[in-house]
Amino acid sequence: MTEPEQASPAPALVAFDLDDTLAPSKSAMPPTMATALGSLLDVVPVCIISGGQIAQFRDQVLAHLEAGPQQLARLHLMPTCGTRYYVHDAAAPQQDGAPAGWRLVYANDLSPEQIQEGFAVVEAEARALGLWQERTWGPALENRGSQITFSALGQEAPLEAKKAWDPTGERKSALRDAVAARLPELEVRSGGSTSVDITLKGVDKAYGMRRLSQVTGIGLESMLFIGDRLDPDGNDYPVKALGVPCRAVADWQETVVVVDELARRIPQQSTAREAVG
Image 1 (cartoon, rainbow, N blue to C red):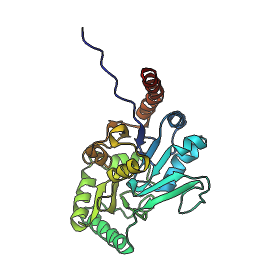
Image 2 (spheres, helix red, strand yellow):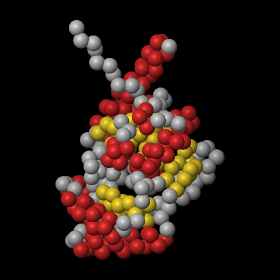
Image 3 (tube, helix red, strand yellow):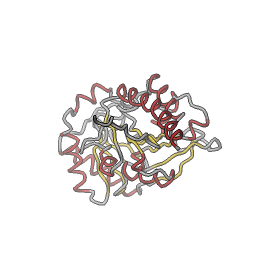
Image 4 (cartoon, one colour):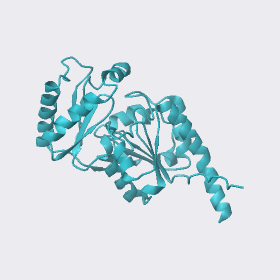
């Protein structure tokens, strides 16, 4: 008679991508996801790490998450692919787009010269590849301090337009390769559905996860990362390559199911361990 399969250990921290994982791209976190995330924060620390700015975290997540002080104390925010890190601090004033109550722990900012060169190179290569749009929904190039982001259709482009622009990822990959060849001292990655992100060399989501491990004392092997772009060309892939246990999801609806299951399983496994001990 075979032994029953053992369930994988419950993670000591759960990290998430934001767009298309916790919420539709550039959109508010739906109520069912907010409820599920709140339940997860009751039982385990949570990190959100994304290419977006802290203002997106504020508008997409924090404005819709009904969480108390104990839950917020377990929440770690890493915008711009982990190049910035915020923790909850009730005394922190509102500044730099961050809401009051969130303190900046570190920022790996680009220099003004790097930003200027990055803007020029991205626009030149986008034009050369026929990817530069004269009319966009919002700016195509954005200085996020610690990250330059190129969004082919603009930051405020409708979701359906973004999905249709590059369904195979070939356009983003071509631009990423062209820009990376001209900016070898910087990190150039495919971002969201229409975007390319540029940061300091070696500073990506894997860097953010390593810093998170140092701050929390939780080993990378004890974490779980959930994202929709864990493919080799995706901006979640560095976390997978780092060796962090990962769970790929197709969209935020699938994430709700995963989070609900984790919120039930983690307390059950903790209780079981205490009983054995």
